[in-house]
Image (cartoon, rainbow, N blue to C red; front, side, top):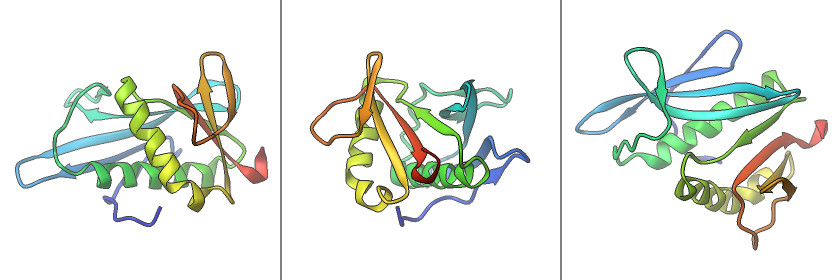
Length: 147
């Protein structure tokens, strides 16, 4: 994905990234976290960062910069895999509409990723290599060289 993205800051372990979403009206602190959920599998979480350090993954920012925010998240994924190439990454939208948005982006950008990454679609308790004609609830991403 060769799109503009926001500058971001990484934690020392590259499991938490922060950046600012900017518009003419407001700035919103965003966080991307990679949380170990089972052996070798991390969950990707994106949300608005509150003053208390907690994030809200259900907030609707309406900052008119969705493409920049998503491109920034993708850059953090690249950083994650540079440090953790043998891990897998699970992600799903916090709402069905957000999961659908992620599926659209994966389908659109798939040709740029498919040489380096394996993208699996998850539906219920099953998963398969991502197919354009299927609808998924969640996704698992891994590097091909470590599958």
